[in-house]
Image (tube, rainbow, N blue to C red):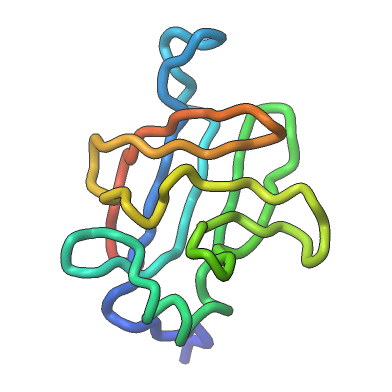
Length: 128
């Protein structure tokens, strides 16, 4: 018997990988995010499902030479989505219009990490 929690059908595992940029012209497949998030029929973040299952919406930021950062997907009252690693800390990573983005393989999303905007490509979207 397993203790694995059964998530609602809207949940997806989304893998984001660092896309090319000035400092890395080829991108970097060893840096990115794993998200466990609910998506709607258009593959956008589903705010209603998120609200009902906030504790299940996870984020893992991985990069070479650094310990993985584990956190949660959160949403500010104005609707802006962010990755929260430690409650009350100011080291959150803000998504750039994440609520408007479609999480479809090949699409791009941007995340502000440590004051710098980075672009990531959606590498995979699958049921957990």
